[in-house]
Image (cartoon, rainbow, N blue to C red):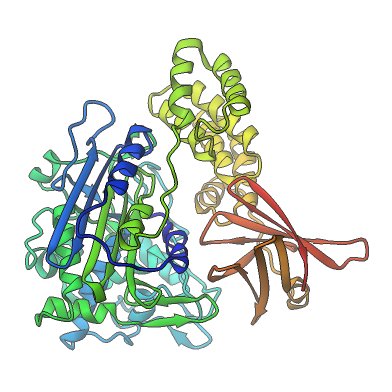
Length: 569
């Protein structure tokens, strides 16, 4: 359930929608092939709907080793697209008069549960469905006993404990802040109201009416036989079992089934049935925030006033769905890799959107070098290749990270540790390499080094919930930062980072906001008095003063890049 969506959606502003052929273009097929052949994804399956026509395309395998070709009947985890199912179930209850969007969540939870409030306002079902509850992305008592299956041991008792003790830091309904725990709580409230499990509700009200026989939370025997095994990089990884928070991301499905679901959503306004009427309600705009340039339906993100979109990701899978009801088009893309496939869906919905050429991963070449010549010579090879063949391979930060986890999964932890060390040395301003190195140190019993690197990861990306949670579990105190309104005001202005790219900083109600050229506005949060981070992407900004103590520049840190900018306004 990674938060990838906002990056994809922001890209839609710049491109015009034109007529699209009913077939998946060769350009898209070749792009998919290049992703699989260069070992970015293991397998990819696409279903594209245009009116009454459905076109499928699949490439790759169900497993990196000894897999069979994927197809439209292969089973994947769909991650956070599950949230749209939860919203549809809520809409069914609202249309039947059993529930109201304005009902406070306290109405459905046990009487002994103290629900969070702020300034006398209660969280409602609508707040949960639009990510405006003020609840965080994850509960702070999600202690991952199994990092490769992080939700498996999370109980309803733990969920209640979190809800009863959590203090909101933003006003309810004031901003959209993506919350897995909020949507998981909504799924559980639907369970309590109906006295049925979330899976039973999905099967009864959505899967059975649409004949989606391979859409479940728990695998059936036939689904297991057609499972596309999840992969973190090139390494097979266990499936995620999400039960307590199932409404946030627990569903497994196939492209064949998901095409039925997307088609039903496209026709929501034209077919009169309980399910289609519920889908229609779930599509209606339910929240707008001009400051964030955000618009939400129930769970669905509304983009450009036209597209309904949601993606999803678990430990070994990524998924993307998009709908344009006006043109009766939709798409579903599923992959059994933790590399997102948003671009494929966007390209099919917006043909003018350019697909970035795929370079071969240096990880594939380096893996062979390690096996032939050992890790020390392989590191020397990597550094020389990065200097002399920079344009021939993909040297981005995640390439070494992926390779490190591949050796980690093969129980070659000494090699993995050296790869993670190399990644930190090559990308000292990126948070994730430190997080991975810390995990390797912790696994190796070197707790002090693990703490040191988790702290550095959190410093570079204070939105890194994993680092925060692990440090808390190790009884490490984490500094909480507040910045005065006067100091926030001193940072406002326009900063020019490139001739055609600037960042505007504004403040409102004691909070700071960032807006880049041609992008939505997002809130930024303090990690130090002059350093702020984003939650929607891994990035941070640092404000700099001149010799007179006046803020005259800022620096943006993102994707290993360091971009300084002068204050021009």
